[in-house]
Length: 347
Image 1 (cartoon, rainbow, N blue to C red):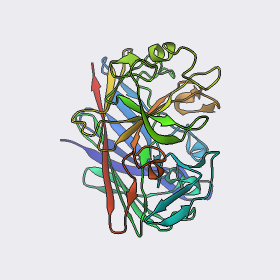
Image 2: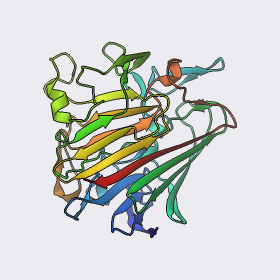
Image 3: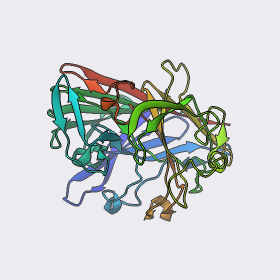
Image 4: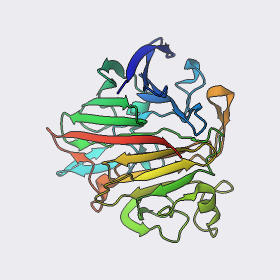
């Protein structure tokens, strides 16, 4: 294994703080670049079937756009996704989080790790990002956070999360990377396969699961056999999507209890690039950007509908209030340790 990890200065935030960039390169010339701001996967260059390197993640065009950019591969925490009304209870103690969404609370609120400046360092063949999460939104305790990235000669990007809380709390980190394996700015012709046969059931008119599960078979959410995102969308009978004129996925799948292989696989026929997702988390989110807002990304691209697809691993949203789902509650003295792997290949 010939992995090289280096660091340099990417730029500065609006308040003058310096943001370092860490580059991990393998023997094939492929590389990933992670920024201290948000522990963000900013660049991920892998080979296609013609032997050409291409960047397969969306990112900010320049340092001046970094804080405003919304489609970056940031780490989301301490609790990704939604908590109904921002309210939950642990062992009889009630918690009320500061609301930041119509459904209550989403993506860590004002404490979202995606807007935090981590401290990065090089440890062997890994880039490690640390953060002391001082609670300001109602979780009731602080948390030590470590996110470790490595990228090997087999094209495997490993993300290892370690979080230790100073009291009872909920922990649910993820990475919100937007992938485009074809480099066209439209992922609808990507083929997707998922190991999940069930998705969560939302309360009517919300994005809040109620604890139930629904089979995906025979629905536009069915990726138990590989098919393109475009084909799956076209299978809708007019009742599935609730996004007006631009249908999109924002779907939460619950994985089988024991997944021995990949949880998901994405493939771009145009380039031959594929990506397998491995995780020890119980759920995976499929999100295809509906393009409600446009913004500039790398290479001068204007990012709009279907510019990327997210495959986010984690606990199901609102799982703390739904005992039917695996619990994101961690008690005093417990540590969350979780690994997600994005493995790239050529076909």
